[in-house]
Length: 209
Image (cartoon, rainbow, N blue to C red):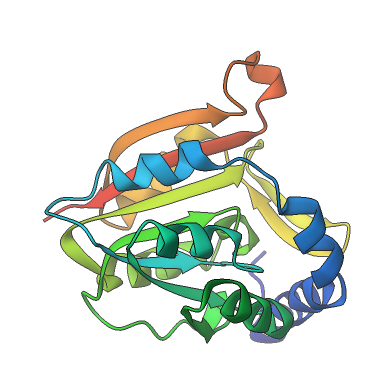
């Protein structure tokens, strides 16, 4: 059964409220997460000489946005939670846009790379093809999209106050291919563990001509 506009609006509002109410504890709990593998995965697929124009989609409190800026890149953050937007601006000194994932307004062809770490799983499955096409349109032709999401058996729904959609690799590939992306690589995280202990699926994609 498809979600109605009112249901989609409620999904956004309640999920963002969850993050706004827990912004300080979320920042403290994720501050020391090592995602250098993910940052490197995006950067190695970007063409041309740096610095690059990078969108940190769902930047949260700004941990990775700060890293991109420190590496010399022209980084822009985006998040729907107002508390996170303020925290990310302060932490990184970067421009940060407040936008709902279900109502994105992105400039066409603006970015060399889009970094979507632990964010796209909040997009309901029926809306994901549209959102992915919007991300594709915001990339330059030789740009790349990195995404990392908790994997699952293609189910979605509420999970501890947040809405999430949990895809396996085959389903994620189908969604990305439908949106006009070609796969560059994928891997599971954390590295070096048995697959059943790797809940995260990371992948990098390039827009197809």
